[in-house]
Image 1 (cartoon, helix red, strand yellow):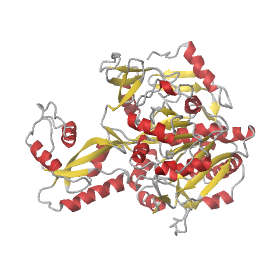
Image 2: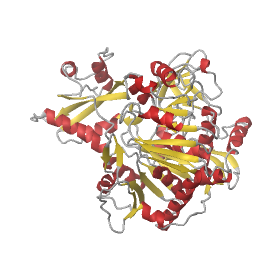
Image 3: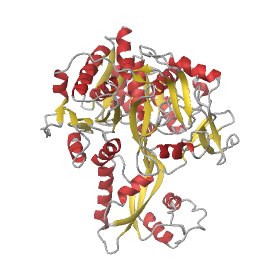
Image 4: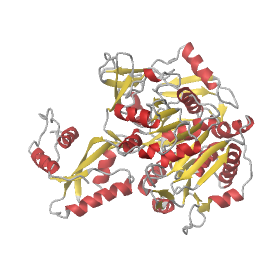
Length: 620
């Protein structure tokens, strides 16, 4: 990209989009491009909490419901915009009172409860930076993120609830902080009657802080380039990357893409099933919907607990108009009789959405016919944590008849995408290639926390001058884009990107395993699944117990949603002469496919043992 990457028409386009939100101070420059870093709306000042709350109060929406919340037991709660405004102000005052100031990093380790949104907006209100850690992650994953950010403050709950089980989040926090010295204060949202072990001079109760707070905190005007949040996402290196998003460019981008794709109005009742621990929860559960002043639905629980009707009950109960979920969930429901759906009135639905991975045509048609009753447009979106918001998607103006199931349609206005070969040259229509983005956009991340070199290497080094998201794609004869999966070694498990290196690191954390390799395989429900091939120390015989230990390690070190389909213990792994493990060969064996070219394989004799293990195994 050249120094000046936007022509006048594109600059005017983004400037007009920026005018759709309120600024305390207007920008002096639309884009400051110092390759590969983009600073949008330089000189402008704004506040995310103000845009989500104060602006809606001023627009006369104070008595409108902002959040409907429900858990799997049927417990429910609602907040009007005025009630949410008061709660956020009280908590923001409390956070300032315990020493949090502009620029401080605050860790949020919370389940899907209203206090999670309240916490995000309160942190943003005082100009601090939030780092939300998915509450399904283990204490080790939490600890890793705390150590990387060097955060001084953490907000959590005593428990979360999932499939009727109580998840002891505060216990996980205490475990993570055993040998962590940077955290000075922990705020706990008390939800149960369980006794909480409060550490003196560190632990504080949310309710007590709120009860002793003032009703208003002046929102801190922050620079457009000021970080709004850091969110960790996995990659092939095994170590999660702290993706940093700005305040100004990010908010402009999610505000406008949300409106453009979903065609919402102030009467819209919207439900995105994503957890706030993921970027979808940030962009399209919290910030974009609340900036627009619409009503959102939050649900704490699994999609099939206490039964397979729970989601459809919620849609009927709250008259949901837009339902945005994942292909993983859709494929799970496809396994069951649609009697659970037919029992409920879903006629309030106007649009459906999909996020997280490719929505395959079979799932697209099921979603369209069974949930949308053949009348709801499907907004199948492609984007990443790094992009901030939708990059390719149908829009609210597109005719249903022109949608192609399995395709994400076209790049949105202002996004310049292409499919190229390894030399960066455009491939012919229909040919597989690497997806690239040729121009910066306001939602683009502003870097990786504490790692400029990784930011440059991962996203900007493969195709000089273009952003490389790491995906294969193709364009058909009509110009529609089709995403073909990751070009690197990252798995997408139930919408969560987990690097194979990160998984292998957990496997070899067991003292009896000296080497491991992961083979990613398709999973009809989760998108990607995996099996583990492990080499154990000589003389160790208790393989059944070891297999259980390996599975338990995945739960403890990453989270319960990461579980191998099988663990195979072998004497050696297929390697090249240079020592590189040929994971594609392992994958081919598991799937019963041709091994392809194995001329570089040094130890071909190991393949017979691996084939025997796979053919005689029973899935976990």
